Amino acid sequence: MGHGWQGVALKLMRGQDFTFTVRSNERISERLHRLSFSDGGMLRATGTHPTMWVRLWFDNGGRPHQRAYTLVDPDPAAGAFDMEFVLHAGCAGDWARTARPGDTIDATVQGSEFALPDPPPSQLLVVGDPASRPAINSLLASAPSVPATIWFETSHPADADGIPHEEAAGRRVVRVPRQDGGAKLVETVRAALPAHLDPAAYVWIACDTATTRKLAAFVRKQLGVPKERLHALGYWRP
Image 1: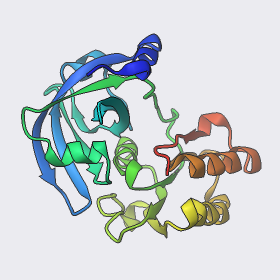
Image 2: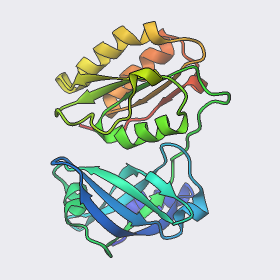
Image 3: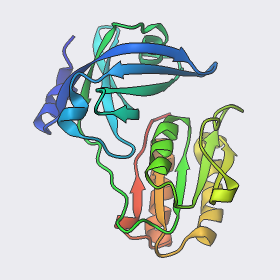
C-alpha cells in the first residue's frame, strides 16, 4: 500500500521511511496494548530524543491512514523499542489488537524534535492525557531530579496508571476527569498553573488539539511564558 499524498508531502519535508517488525505483544489492561518492535535500522539512522514519536501507516479501507505514536524505552544498541496503543475503535486499534510477531508496518520519521533547556528547568509543569502518557513518562525520565506537577485528563479510572510519581521526589499527578470536550481540564489548569509558575519552569502540553491550543495561548499570552520555556503539541482530534 502506498502512502498517498500525505506520504509525498512528508517525503518533500525530508521524512525518512522505515519498516518495523513486531517482536511481541502484551495486553496491559482492558484499554491498553503494548507492542515491541524491531526498528528496521531507524534508531541508528536518526538517534533518539525524549518524547520521540513516529508516524505509523495503517490500511483504512484501502486508503492510507497515518497516526503518530511515541517510542517507549528505545534501545539503539538492540534496534528495538516498544509502543503503547490505547484501544479505541478504528484502524489503528484494530491493527494493534491483532498484530503478532513477524507482522510489519511502515513508518515515517518527520516532525519529532524536542530538547529540554540547558541548564535543566526548576520544575516541569505538564498537561496531558492517555494519548501522551508514553511521552510524559519519557519526559520525566529525561529529567529524573526535576520536580514535576502533571495535570492528567482521564475518562477511565485506570487512565493515569503507569505514570511515575513520588510525592517525596517532588512529583505529583492531578487527575482531571474529561468533561465538556476538555473544558474541565482547561478550567483546572488555568486556575492552578499561575501559582506553580516561576521564571525557570518549563511548561509541556500535549492533549487533544483544541485543548492544547487554548492552554498554549493562555500560557503564552496571559502568563507571558517565553517560547523557549513552552512546548505544546496537539496529540489527537476528538
